[in-house]
Length: 245
Image (cartoon, rainbow, N blue to C red):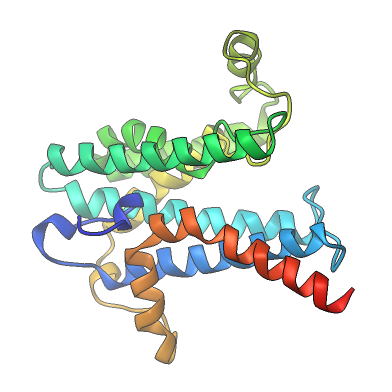
């Protein structure tokens, strides 16, 4: 895949793009930027930001749902005929490199709560785990739905014991600036694989009007945008603080 859209692209190695996937991804990262800017504004006292079941908690759920559906759809559309191993490995390397940048940056800024498994870490791992389901989209759907059901019905259906076992050895922080749980969000990637088989992906576009092309372009460069967007947004919040407070 060209540029940095390897975060969750599909069918790009064939020279074709699926507009709806780009638009979905672009919309997700735009909403993510809005989410992060609200967090930045809260740091300067402009608004109250809570993540315990309030608006911003549900807003984040919407963002990651859109993003991870696009991850699954991209995997299916890019590899359903045959897994393009070179393309897949290059994509994984880019995502892992981006994840390491996030971990290092947050470790320098927040040494007691650095990001050790955020969105990019999740995408790298989930992509490997979801790869066997590309040839079985119905099984992917059943498994994805089952993961969400079991996660919500059973207190023990999570990876908390794994974290507790690895935390002392790997010196993972007790808290973190961002955590994307492999369970249940792997289920959304698997659901995205099933949805990608529907014909509407190659037919429809989002009703975005004149924003459709900019949003799609943003979706094609989602990794680069993800890595760079927070610094200027925090700078803007700081500037507003200086001007208005």
